[in-house]
Amino acid sequence: MRAAQRLTMALASWLLGSGCVYYNGIYNAQAEARIADARLRRDDEGEATTHFQRSAVIAETVLVRHPKSQWRNRAVYIAARSGAMAAQCERAMPRLRTLLTGTALSAGERDRARLALASCEVRAGRSNDARPRLDSLFRSADRELARQARLWAARAALSMGDRDAVPAYLGGIDAGVLQWELISASMSAREYARVESLLVQRARLGDYREDVTRALREILADGRLDAAERIVAQYDAARVRDDGRARMHFALGDMYARGGRDSLARGHLYAARTLSQRDTVTGHEAHARLALLDLPRVASVRELDTLMARQDSVVWRTAYARQVADRLLLFRVLEGHRDAESAAVYLAAEIARDSLRAPRLARALFLRVARESPASPLVPHAWYAAALLEPDSAAAWERRVLEEHSRSAVAARLRGDDPTDRPDFVSAPELLRLQWTDAVRIWSDSLRKLRLPPKPAGSR
Image (cartoon, rainbow, N blue to C red; front, side, top):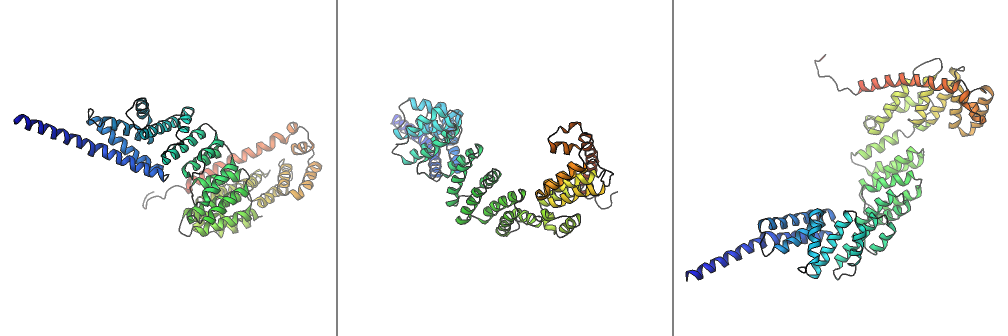
């Protein structure tokens, strides 16, 4: 009787222990894996990864605490597959290979293990090994597994630079995550026609990410204005969130402004400011660029002062306006300095042309060099620089250089001669270097003083 009781108690204890292993370990690990798979079906890979990580940790706990449990093989499978899907491949890959050489897995588990192993191979840069494994899963009865195999095959093709194979792998799958990866890869390869096509597809679905603005800037920098406009128009039509559309319009407006296309810039900057109705950085920056978009029209220092005096504190608090203010300070240091050769004024003209993007002001200052210092070796250089800013009068200015400064380095270049034996070839740059060194020292010191924090009250 006592022997029967002991046997019953031992059996109950074993069943209880076995049940704890299942319910506290295997059950929870499988539950996390099921949630992860559900997230994958919605292409939410970030959430899926989090749940796969939890699944793997729980399964590992079972292996550590119950190494001889009857659930051990199940725990190994869950830990290996979930670990691989969570990109924890170092431990997962050997386990998956061992499982795939055995007979413990069902047909469905075997396919999922093969997919998990292939995902690790792609991550490890062994896409040549992964692609055949993935190709064999395309006809799986499990549609989601077949879809995931196609996604990973497309990633394998991407990693091998075989971007043309990606559409064939995807077929009719709307794989947003993968398309963004393809967009990124295509941008790196400067395949902007493909980038445009993919972005238009994402726009029609209202799928906006910050990557769009980066792509727009690269597309515009490549001179594809129409492509950038089509992408933004599609996102506007899809009515994505106003803040996203504001950033896109701002990107276009900013790039157009940098390229001197003021009318195009103005339209997009107005749109960015309108869409950023709240007190946002994008709205303020768009407002600042609109306010300072008249810099190219400024033709004198007085007009420049008037334009700057009109700006409110909101403009001057923006990063863009602070950059303009820094350049403007250097311009004023140079323009206000008087030297016999007008080298400082010449440098101020270059600042106006290159940093302030005020070509009319730059032209006026180049001509001032000739007017105030007619004997300066910089005069032919100034006339030539002015000619470049006024194409309609370029021939007249070049003719004047050839007639009145025929021995200058500039005249030699215009004639196609070697300018290096002319006196001003060395003296003109040296004059500019000396003035520039002094001006930058004064400017740097002024900036440092302007940016010092205020002293506490009562301090000396």
